[in-house]
Image (cartoon, rainbow, N blue to C red):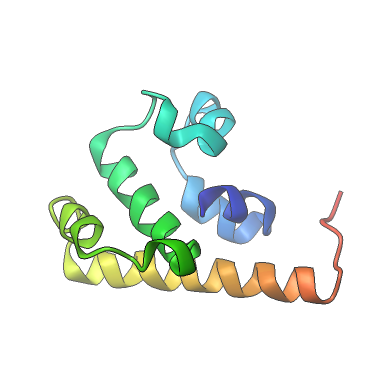
Length: 102
């Protein structure tokens, strides 16, 4: 999900990646295989990825429960809305064959 956010525009990306190190940004595509993310960030990435891959994952309850150990219900709503918005913008971009800026 965050890899998609990285490609979707600076405003969303800047908010999502505020405070991320260059190493973390470089490792986003392989976030599950790297140790450069803390437990809280990994829980957010897992939840958002499960929403992005909804057809395959069905957003398992255990990922939601794991994320709730690190985030309030309000923060979970924010994470879910961010994932939904980024996925929507990516589908619009793909559907209309929009090329990334730069």
